Image 1 (cartoon, one colour):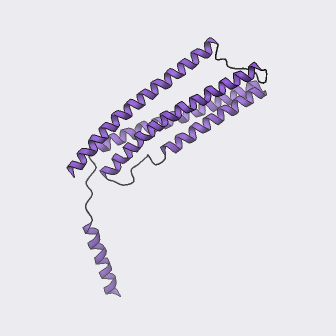
Image 2 (tube, helix red, strand yellow):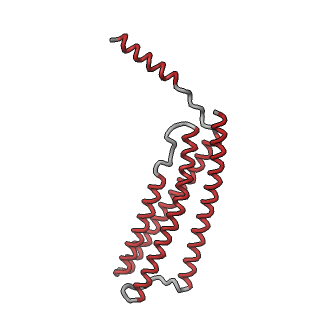
Length: 198
């Protein structure tokens, strides 16, 4: 029995020694992936702060109004915030650390993060379109006297707000898209170098 166990251990030891040694992850790749993670953490923190601020505003708005419109408005804000936060959490799932300590795993993680950035841009525009549709519907219901209008697209404040938010969202989208495009090129080159090195 002891001889069988010793032979099994020897076979496992031989198998383990036959495995190729993993090459260390180059510092440049590790540094760039950590920089992506740092930006992800800041983005997540800012998103949660914005969600808390919007929900607090909705609660205060509903508490000061105490009518159906105020309550409905708060529900709409909560629904949109919940949708955005759930997307954000799902979009970041599996992006925090590579599944293994290898150059290819780090590069794959970086490229997946870049793809998720593109997905976040598309979602942001979808959410913005949904918000504009809700505002338009709210204004339309207000025109028929079914609900108290609290926002008007045709007012100077309404048009300025829409233009400002569209400009900010467009600027953010362009910045993220350009950075992601540049990072994709850089990680493609790093992947090529690491393949040539191995």
